[in-house]
Length: 67
Image 1: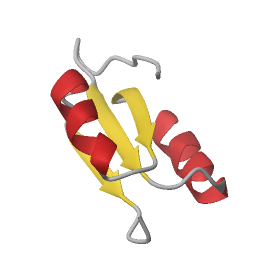
Image 2: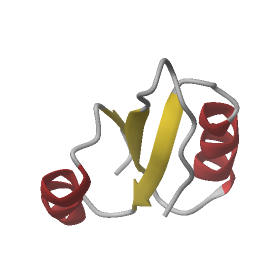
Image 3: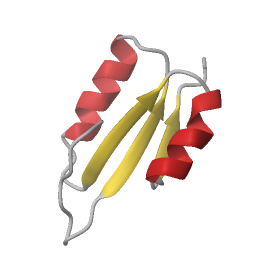
Image 4: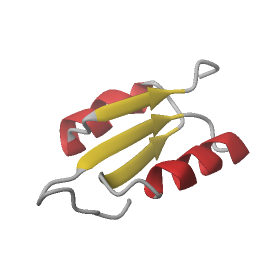
């Protein structure tokens, strides 16, 4: 569910919590362009956040306030 990019042998995984739409797609594209970002995950429901965080342990979680 994403790609790995290295930053001094490590990368930062990111989770985006937002409904599937152009905002989420654009945000994903911008984040993918950052060299220090590894896996990028996206979920549409707050209920899925805890499962994703437990499984992948992202360092950064970005919430769309409308969710």
